[in-house]
Length: 204
Figure 1 (cartoon, rainbow, N blue to C red):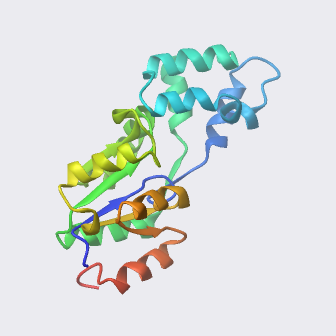
Figure 2: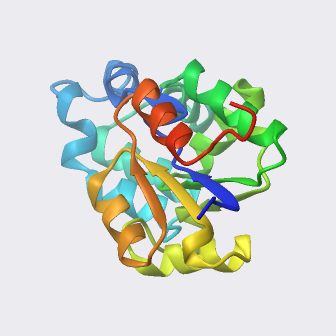
């Protein structure tokens, strides 16, 4: 079946990211002895609660300050934390081709408000989607099936009509269980080749 909608993961598919960039900047303003390489691994539970909407941006900042001794303002922390992304141009171009063909395109991401606000400001392509299913807005993270139900409800398409691109095997697995057409993204070239096999983009 030719898909009726394409659903993109965000991180490592459309934009790359490197949390070590943020960790180094935060550590430079934190209490002595903080290991930059462990800032996010040691406090992963705080980030998970932020990305599931259990805490808001102010609480995330406050908890990270308590955990690390960060001495900067909330604005400084937000900029350090979010400025970790670089565009993956071949995938952004593929998104543009699909959109130009008239095929609805959606973002489906485990993410947070600081990251989304930053990406929206810095990367114009992000504004050109038909909808966004973001973990922090729905109280669940992939591969939780509840978030996939949100995608189906928002796109108003049957499972077989949804084409899903993600770099995480566990996320793809949940899509396949739901009968989505799911492609594990490993490189832009491989993903484009996989789409072309099913006739996408339509004019290719």
